[in-house]
Length: 452
Ligand SMILES: Cc1ncc(COP(=O)(O)O)c(C=O)c1O
Image (cartoon, rainbow, N blue to C red; front, side, top):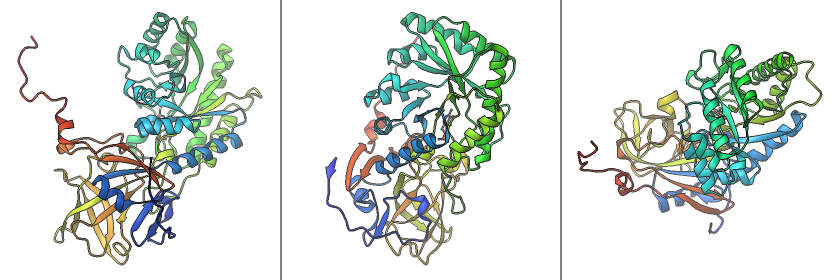
């Protein structure tokens, strides 16, 4: 990391609640700074848009979550970071160094973690839509725990384990059938969802097949009720369904889960009216639900696994944009980013808060539509309070650490932004801004008709 001089810190005084920003955010004459780094300086050095991640914020959230698990779940817990929330290798390494393991959904996510030095024994591969060679490739990287999402995944997994001469641990993904308090596209645990197996014949069949397969060891159940969930009662319902199904399987088959993976999904505040959810309430609700679902569970409960993505990384991130034009008649301010670096607004009608980078840019201003530069009417980033916006002014978008880098596209052939990590006055470039040549690198401008 490059060492730079520490700017003078001033407590934040701007109009938005502090819950949107990492704890290190301060505002001074030179504008917002995060992790001891002035955002204006980062924008100048790296161009805009630029993604900034405060690694100290991620570390402190992970510590808080470990403490919440120790306080509220009696038999130990393992935290898996859901890599889909931020797939950069350096983020995988940061979380692994803090004690988290990784939940992955593809060989690409596994290879990112392995490239950063995370061992396969710290990585779990989810089911759902596995390609034929995924099992063998994951096993070759040392992955030894898999979540099975469909009966069809079991035989190929057993065959791959047998060919590799290893035994693997398996959790079955159960569809909890819970309607979560979230956007429909994020309610992955709702009855009829494509994920997991509902209680009934398919689940029984999967449990039986895994238990009979030579190289597979059924160690637990996995349930994920959805994403961006605020209400602890939804998590209580997840714990209760897990407890009830575990109790039922135990009564009928004698099998007892050693591990209960109750998914991720804790929300973060995106809109001005959103409360700050709390991880202690999350784990406490899961435990309360499990006790209710299985009142006479054995004294030693299964080990808890949770799979947070968003809550660990979202608030640690922000994006700095530059205003390209101000259209007074249309009431909008056009910035040099948009749905290519943050597709969540278009996908989920997600809320985002933005403000001027410098003091005085936002205070006393009026609401403008902040729109992205791509050719889509829906490329809107939300509203922003600005007093006198001008081309060249900088805007900061908060809560940008989850599902931005991971979901970014090159729509309109816009190069993906640089990603910089900051902490305690230091900064480290994690991804340089893409160049037009990067976009052309895999393309064959004049394809030859020779493929037969
Ligand atoms: C199975 C599973 N686990 C964990 C997560 C992480 O969810 P979140 O980022 O909301 O914590 C997801 C998100 O889609 C998921 O599908």
